[in-house]
Length: 271
View 1 (spheres, helix red, strand yellow):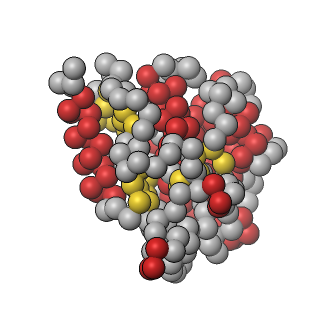
View 2 (cartoon, helix red, strand yellow; view 1 turned 120 degrees about the vertical axis):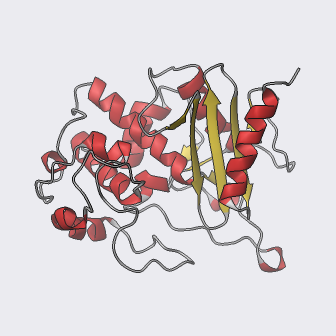
C-alpha cells in the first residue's frame, strides 16, 4: 500500500520497482490522453466515433460518451471469454469486425445512462490511435507519461521484472494477455511507485489540469480501481490532498476497494 501519509513501501514487503498489472487504472491514462489531445487540437471531445473509425455506423456516440461510460455499449464485447485468459483473442481485427455493428451492440442511445464499458474504452483507444496516427503506447507516452515524468509504465514489461501472483507450488501464475484491442481499457503494467506517481501528479498536483472524466467520483473522492484474474488495485485522492494506492495479489477486488477506503478514512486522523 502506498498513501499520502506514509513513505513509499509495500505492506507485504515487496519492492516498489517490480511491474504489476494495473487493470482498469489504464482507463485513466486513456482518458487523460484524450483530454490532452483535445487541448492540442488533434481532436474534439464531441467528435463522433465514425470520424476516426469510418467503419463504425452513425450512432451518435462521441469520444466523450466513451470516456464517461455513457455510450450505451455493453461492458464486454459479444462472444465467449475464457476465464483463464479472456482477452487473448480480442485483437485489433476482432475489434474491427465489431465496429460496423456498434449500432446493434448499443443497448440504449448515448448520453442517457452510465454503464461501465471495457468495450467502450477499446473503441476509444482505437479512435485515439487513428487520430494520432501512432500506437497506443506512443500516444500515451507523448500526452501523459512523459509530461508527468513517468517511465515505469508499459504494455509489455519484461516478465522477469514483474511481480506475479504465486500459484500451485509457488510458481508464478500466468497473467492475462491484454496487449491487444483491450489495452486502452486495462492492459497497462506499472511499478507501484509509478502508479502512485500517476495518482499524485494527476489528482493532487494537477500537473495536467483538471482530472479526466475517466475517474470515478464520490463526494470529495476521485478514484478508480482495476482487477485482472490474480491482481486488484484501488487508487484515489481526496480534495484535501490525501491519497492512496493499494495493489494486491490473489485478493478479492471488493476487499481491495474496501482497504483503500479504510486507508483514506484512517489517514484523516493520522498524526
